[in-house]
Amino acid sequence: MAQSDWWKKAVVYQVYPMSFQDSNNDGIGDLPGITSRLSYIKKLGVDVIWLNPIYKSPNRDNGYDISDYQAIQPAYGTMTDFDEMLKKAHSLGLKIMMDLVVNHTSDQHEWFKESRKSKDNPYRDYYIWRDPVDGHEPNNWGSRFDGSAWKFDETMGQYYLHLYTEEQPDLNWDNPKVREEVWSLMCFWLDKGIDGFRMDVINLISKPVGLPDGEKKPESKYGSTSMIAGGPHLNEYLREMNQKVLSKYDVMTVGEMPGATPKDALEYTGFDSHELNMVFQFSHVGISGNSDKRLGHWNDEPINLVDLKKALSKWEIALDGKGWNSLYWSNHDQSRAVSRFATDDPKYRVRAAKMLGTTLHMMQGTPYVYEGEELGMTNAHYTELAQYEDVQSLNAYKEFVEIEKIVDKETMLKYLAFRTRDNARTPMQWDDTENGGFTQGRPWFALNSNYKEINAKENLEDEDSVFYYYQKLIELRHNNDVVVYGDYSVIDLDDEEVFSYRRRYNDETMLVISNFTDKDVIRDYGQVNGKLILSNYSDNKNTRLRAYESKVYLIE
Image (cartoon, rainbow, N blue to C red):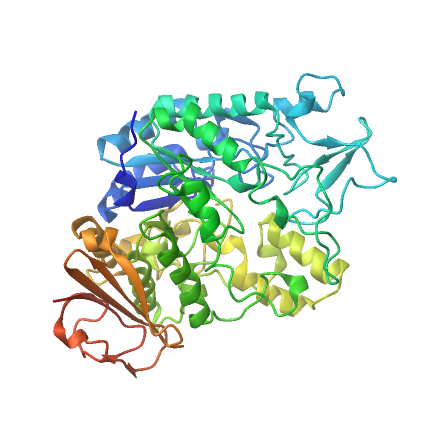
């Protein structure tokens, strides 16, 4: 089946199932809960729903440790519940994209249970086992969460590789039997009628030959694993995936690729590559790291707008006409967009949320809206370690405060509050009733304390809300080819206050202007000659831009 390019015009809504809607009051979001809210998602105007993992899992890493790829997590419901959700979504014209997590499995997966039984077990080579070297780990790689990337198995007398938690052993993609297993499980879901896959850390599946030591910086305890990204056989494996599976279905694919450059993206997702449709890259969410390199991304510094513009513009320009961008501010692994990239000050939050939406959605690429972003949901502003659930955050606190003593408790708590993944994982805020309409039971994770002020009910009753503004953004994309296909040129890259750019397609020019500050500024880009088609203010002051003002013009 030849693939169409419907995904170029699509807008995706990401659902984190555990936190979206609980239907049976056990405090955990589930599939019937998602089904009950499909009309809400449809009202927003999006085309595709991306579901975070719903497979059976011990939940060591919130579902990214899968123990059975062809079974539903019991807390989320049954396969019948999934089938009903898929049928209802399709009846509403909504497509479903699932998370494909195949760099690693859970250590509770039957493949791994078999693999650790004996060295001659048929499943032994499904994973990456190595003998000790001089009585220690086979190389100096560090896990991306905490500690060494190797776990010693006493029974086997060998180490196995885990780039994430020790309960997430990496699959050995060099084994053709592993690849055939992956093709089979993909077809299982595609034959059910799903519409695509978001592929978790897919550029890490091909490990470097010989598993050499990584570069070890003076401030680091372990060697870097950055050389794993884009390994020697990645193109080969993705082409094989496309040939044997993806090319037979009309679906969309996005590969999460940590460390990817535009050059990498064109290699794996270029229009002529026959691999994937687009990548999730991290350039713009990776800016503003800590000046103390040992702490990585943990900090509480506001973003530098010039750095942000450079990161986004680099991808827009490099992929134009050759590949396709994925556009996102936030997801289950990032802080809430308005808190990180603008402000969640109640005085400006709504304007700022609309401004961010405008800035992103008017670019070239497929936009992704993370649940609650369309309401202007904010960071949770935790103050105590006991409030956290995320394994990455808890491990970071333990390593940097308790073990390495790099930073004091108070400072690390500020860093966690700003950057923790838990900010995105608090339950969806539906209304101002107890637990925000998410559950009548005890929620698996506490709601953000501001749910009585910020919720879907409040948004839907206010015609000037963030929700209805996002609805307009999505309509603009659906109805204007210049938004979908136009090329991109940034205006005044070094402007530290305003992000402005032009899009051109055929005879149309669109001008997008966003003030990233809480003060009035004056900018003249010739907008007085254009037709204002969208703004987050009710009146137009032309060259004067008010706090977090964003405007879209069509220029004759």
